[in-house]
Length: 445
Image (cartoon, rainbow, N blue to C red):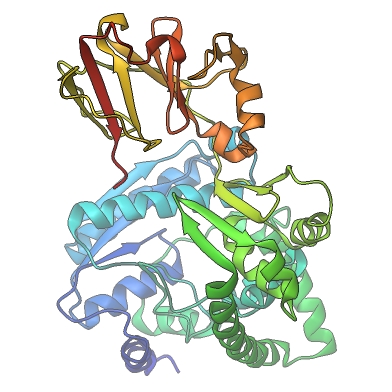
């Protein structure tokens, strides 16, 4: 096994089209045996590689010794090396996630920065088949559906895993055979971490019942992969019928969804990549017959059950930043794409397009202010001689909660000029006394 690992590495990488001989690869290197094996195999096939090491500052002096060792390896192999440090605990606390998840997020985000900076084709990580089995059991516990039970994949986007064909023992044998020095992470024995508990406690106990459990799980992973491909094909067909993307919103037709034979499966496949979990998805499905307006959130997205559609948008806090727009010297660094011009009253030809506003230029205090609408805002809707709260206007116009949160206001000082895409303020309309007209168009690109 130890002598043919190189041949199997080449065969596996070619089978899954992981990289071409001339492509540069960013290799994540911790200093442990798995990543050292991956680097050594790349070197033996003359693959151009760049090393990237993260110091997560989680193990005190051990973390610093890992970094020093990786620097030594880069010199021995004569390879370029990128090193960074993270305050992983602070990041985990700030985002309300586990240390493991924080390290993962930080690592892959930084690897992608390096890949872009160096024009590399992929990011290689040293996961092997035992890692994949552990991930399968973690996903089973957390409830991630069939795709989670299929384990790790050879390629996910720009991330490749050329060692998935091998297991932990084969890698250890290879390191011994090649007489390669490597670092041992003592935290791998800390069973407070879920993966370590599965690796060091749960799997050994299961092996007492079924000594061949690892091979059994690998065979199950293969079957789950096949099942997931069937589900993907089925879901792709159904999604074309029930879902659409409009203005960065994913809209799912509720009636079309409930008419399907397996609505929960379709919804699960649609929403799981957006951070919604199984229990939430069942709650969402149960809520579609209740009063519209109910909102569900994941860490990254917001879902609104409206009258006809489920509407999903990217999450995150709505910006409270204000931008300034002067039609005489327009700034291109705005969140909306404004096209404006000043017309004489003779050139003025009104349009019914909601994305175009015609305003009495002389009544405006420049620069105009572009901002999100705020609670307490009011204006005089075109055609009305009395004020109305913007929130009440949205209710009258049947604007849903997601669209409300995304709505922009154009203001002249403290006075609202235009609820963009909806209605201008009556106080700034073009009248018989108007001499110059400001035309503003919103370009959707």
